[in-house]
Amino acid sequence: MLDLIELGVANSFKTIGGRTVFYPWGFGREFVIADRARRERIENGLRWYLILSIISYLHILFFAFFFTQPLLLVLALWPFVSFPLLLRHWTRGLTVADHRAPLRDSTIRQPAANQVRRRLYLAAAVLLGGILLLTDPAYFKPGLALIVVGSLGVAAMGFVLWRQR
Image (cartoon, rainbow, N blue to C red; front, side, top):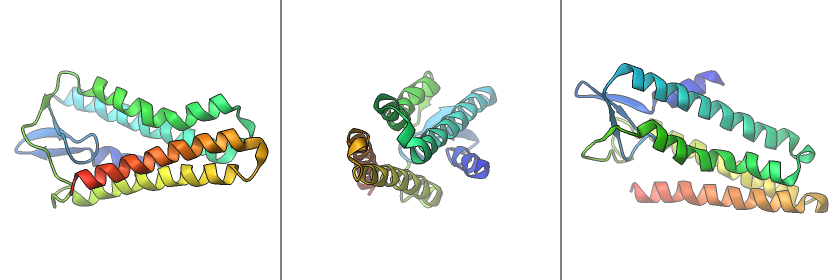
């Protein structure tokens, strides 16, 4: 599991022309990182974000029947809401590169495509979990919340893939 997290962190950085570039989504807008200390802070933050996201989804998957509806909603929405906020914090003061790396760029295509696919599968799993919760009338509202969150995640990843074509 930790190897996958390290792979996700490593795929977010690339050295181009002697400068370190940070790809928050694995492709698209890139940020130039000037010093090693800043890169390490971003790496550590990204690593913790991935670990906490996995933990929150595992809690939903295995313990959904024990949570109250508001807590379930917080656990489901946390990764979607927190990443753009964390990204704004991590990239504050960084220089935006003058071009965007497309998804089809052969130097990053495979890691980026896998990253988008993993997020798409995760959103689909949340959507499926919501559908399964709808089978029990006592968990109709949490199931509906997971369906909404999963649908938004699937739509967001579909938009990212469509935009990069």
